[in-house]
Figure 1 (tube, rainbow over the protein chains, first blue to last red):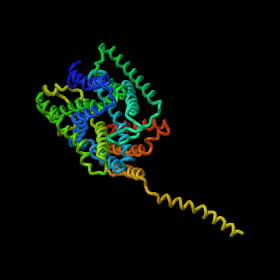
Figure 2: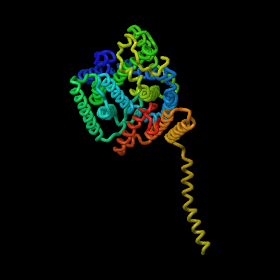
Figure 3: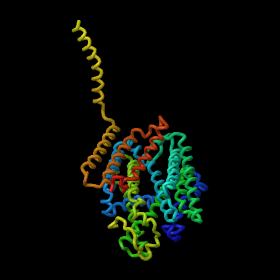
Figure 4: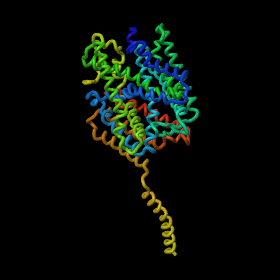
Length: 364
Length: 123
């Protein structure tokens, strides 16, 4: 196995971005920051949002709408979905106390589910890179672990983030989603069973291959566990979880963008070109993110609603739209996507690889 | 005697019909609540999805028809969620069922507009 092909960049970068950084942050907050005052972390996370969280939403929209080919390939996502999401936004603006809480609640439940999907996707990518075949049984065990951790996380987030049965979100009071008391124990039982079975498959693979499993394969699932089980009880940590999720996403999205611009569009294969394209793509997405999360609420500031309520409803809408688009454009079964996700960034600096699968992009 | 009996029946029927008329009239006169208006808009949006699929028959791919159907499912799911989303407060098991339904909805939406394997009759 070529060691460089296991990583998108290298051991350090991949390990830190995929989960190392977030686990270190969790440990640091657990040890050094037990204060109930989460305001300093909140403001720090807000600054990070400008350069990581918001651009990650913009990157999805940019990837979908950058090519007319995508419009033809995914017409309902490109044309049909925005009016439906906007309809829900209009209903929420119209009835901020009756419809908006449910719209935001839907987003708050869908968001950790979406993170779970990314965890499974990342595990599949690194497993494929490592030569560990994930079949139906392995996927079931992994899904049991990941999605049960998501349920545990929902329960813990609600327990720790609510007061009097409500969660504060952008100044709105969102009712806690009611779940039976036995749910936590049941989810934990399924989660540990899934973890044990998946570990068993990994052990069998290690014995057959006579080599240890590369830790990066298990890192996304371990990170997911930290986020949703112990991390969910630490309020100062779960404020920054979206930042780490977005960081994972941007690494993969950047590689995909480099693939499109340098490999497929015939750009120059050099580190200089990689840097230039990363800066161009990054700055566009930072701008796009600001338009989505600051520009849009300002555009609707004429509504007779508190600005925070408008911003919160629009943030939920951008997120829900993102969940859809993400599901459409990142299908591993798509040959172009899966081949791009097997690349290392250094390959874009070297001679062009022959026989690649061309992604469905004509213009980027 | 027969006339008296007929008159008594008519009076009884008229008597029983009277409150029913008031009740029916009252229900028509009740203002539509915001939630009902939202549900009506949701039903309208679902009809629009169905009609779009109908009028595009033969002109778009099967994947587009499936995506339109899934949009209708999403709208219907959200309408139900606004009605029963907090039912778990009264019936805890129902909260679990709502969560299962939501996870099913998220999973289904994860397959939105993706290529599907052809069925047994597919080419």
